[in-house]
Length: 174
Image (cartoon, rainbow, N blue to C red):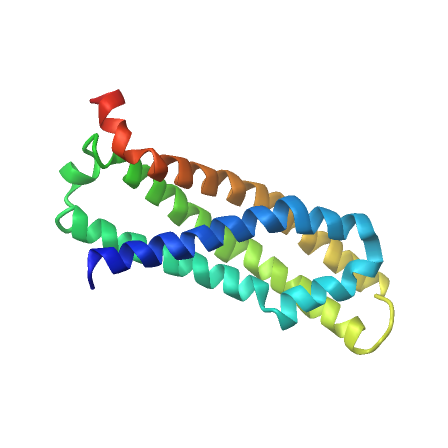
């Protein structure tokens, strides 16, 4: 595949991933929490019908896979000397941050989000308020996902800053 096409895929999917995560964790989630129980239908719509977690995870996977493919092409098959050269170190640091962030998001946040979705679907589908157990499940899974979400935000910030400044690292560490 052409490097230009891979870059467009990588950057396009990455912009969506980062923008969606920041928008959700900094604006949508706090607003929904402030509304309280009335936000349950909105949250269910976003998680289940709009498939937000699946689309978000998919964009993360596409971003990372395209980035790995690009790195393989531009570093002569992952030549360590090239990967850690001053001119490419920013991309390497950003790539590692993105891969770790995908791991936290995909293996920790996503399953908890799916637990919230399933639990919301149970009582919304039956047209009743949540039972105490369902409320506890949502609170626990949602709290764990929110706390891990901050790790995701930090990881994505590191990835974006490292990659956006990568071409200047050789000037600084020369």
